[in-house]
Image 1 (cartoon, rainbow, N blue to C red):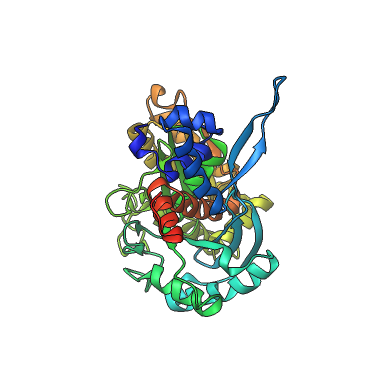
Image 2 (cartoon, rainbow, N blue to C red):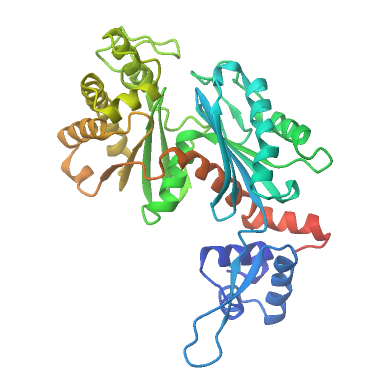
Length: 400
C-alpha cells in the first residue's frame, strides 16, 4: 500500500480484516514510519475504535495485538416484512443486545410504519443498557428494490405508497423525535431484504465463497447476489428481482405487480396460501404456509415441492449465468419439500459442470438474516477507510 494512502482509516481496515494486527505488521504493510503509525493509531484509540490484546508468547515477551473495539458503538437494525417488523440493538461485532418483534403492515405506508418502528427504539436502548449517543447508524431492510445511492424504494410491487419515498430523512426525523432530537442526524442506510440476507449468510457462514446467491421466497420472490464479498445490486437496485420473470405457461396468474405469469404469482408464499385456501385449508399468508409445512400438512408439502420446481426453472438460468458456489433458500417456503423441488429442476436441466461445485442449502441465520445484514451494512459503510477518515476529522478537526 502506498504510504500516502495509508491513512488512519486504512490502518483500521487492515486491523479489522486481520491482515495486520501489530504495530510492526502495520509498518510492513503500509511502508509508514513507526512514529506515523503511532500517530494514526492514537487517533483510532482516542476515538474509542481500537483496543489492545496480548498475543501468544513464543518464549519471549508476548506481543501486543490491536483489535477493533466492537463495543464502542451500536447499530439499530430494522427488518420490515409485509406483515411484521423486527428491530434490534446490535453491537459492531453483530451481537444482538435487545430485540423487538411486532405485527406491522408494510401496506399501511411509510409514515405510519417508520413512526411505529422509531417508537420501539427508546425501550430497546433501555433494555440493551445503551445510551442514544452510542448509536452510530440505523440499517433498514425492506421487501422491495432499493436504489442504493438514494436509499429510495423503486416501484415495489408489495409496498404500496413507498415508491421513491425519502426513507432515510424520514427515519432520521422519527428517530430524533423519539430518542435524541439534539444530536446530529444519525446515518440511515436502506437496502433490499434479499441483498442483506445474502450479505449476512455469506459473511457468517460462507466467507470463502466468491460467488454466492440467496433466494428468498415469502410473500414475494427475490434474490440477493454477493460477488467478491460485496452485494451486487445492479444499476438502480433491480438485480435479483427474479419474482417477476414470466413463466411461459401461466399467463392466467395475476401478479401483485399487475402483470400476468410472473414467477411470484405462481410460486410465492402468497400464491401457495391462495391455493391452500381454495382447497379448504385455512391459510392467509406465507407465514401460515410455513406453519403448515412445519406440521407436515400434505397439501402444503405437495404445493411447496411444486413451487420449488417452478423456482428451480428460473434458477437454472441464474446458476448458469453466475456459476455460484452456494445457493441458499430462505423465507417462508424454505423447507425440505421446496428444497427438493429446486434441486430436482436444477440438476435435471442445468449442465453438469454448472452444478458440479454448487451447494444448495437452506438459510442458517433464519429470521435473523436480514437484521444481521442490515447491521453489517452500516458497520462496513461507516468504518470503510474514506468515511472513517472523514468521521475522525470531523471529531478531531485534524486530518488523519
